Amino acid sequence: MSNPPCPAASANDIATIAALIGDPARTNILSALMGGQALTAGELSWHAGVGAPTTSGHLAKLSEAGLLVMERQGRHRYYRLASADIAHTMESLMALAATGPRRHRPPSPKDEALRTARTCYDHLAGRLGTALAGSLDARGHVIVGDGGALVTEAGRDFLAGLGAGLGAALADGNGDGAGGGRPLCRVCLDWSERRHHLAGRLGAALLTCSLERGWIARIPDSRAVTITDAGKQAFSTVFDITAEHLAPK
Image (tube, rainbow, N blue to C red; front, side, top):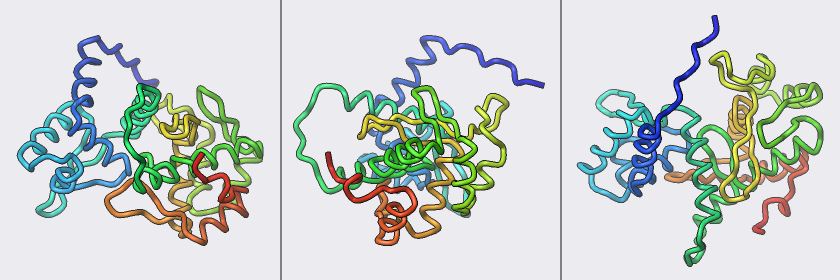
C-alpha cells in the first residue's frame, strides 16, 4: 500500500520554520549538527555562542518543530537533526546566502578547512565532495543532473568493489525514496563550490568508507575533515582526485 500524499504546507507553516532557522543562535545549532553527530546541550551552547538557559529554550523550540530529536544516554541528553532533509535544506540555504551581498570578512584557516572537505550530515561536501561527484560522473559511474543522480551498472560494479558497506548501500537499486525508504543517490548543492555533491545512501556509504579506511579524519568541534596522507594517495589512485582538484580557486 502506498503512503498517503503529504498535505501542502501553508504559508504560516513555512514562515514558522523560516523564523526558527532565521535566529542566528538556532542557525549555529543546526549548522553544528550538520556534521551528523549528536551533541549535548553544553556543546551546542558553545557553538551557538549563548548561555545554557537560552540554549535550552532554542533546543525546545527546534525539537517541538520537528527539526531536532533528543536521545538520552545515562544522565546526558544528546541532540541531532531529525532527518537528512534538514541538513539538505540548511546546505541549500547556505548556497543561497553565499550568492547574496558580499560582506568583508577576512578568510580564516577554519573557513578554508570547511571549503576543502567537510561533512554535510552523513556525506562529504566541499571541494572533496564535489570532486568525488565529478569523478564518478566523468567515468560514467554516476549520472549527475540538476534533479538527482543515477548509479549506472558500471558504477555499481566499481563502487561495490570498494567494499566498506558500499555493496549494501547499492543493494536496493536506484530507489527514489518514494516508498518511504531513503534514495540511493541524490544531489545536494554545495554552498562553497556552487556545484553538486552526492547524498543519499551512496553519499553516506562513501563517507563511511573514507573514515573506515583512514582516508579522512574528523576534526574535533568542526564539520571539517582532514584528508590524510593515505587519503591523498587513495583519492588520486581510485578517483583521480589530485591535490590540484582540492586547491583553493
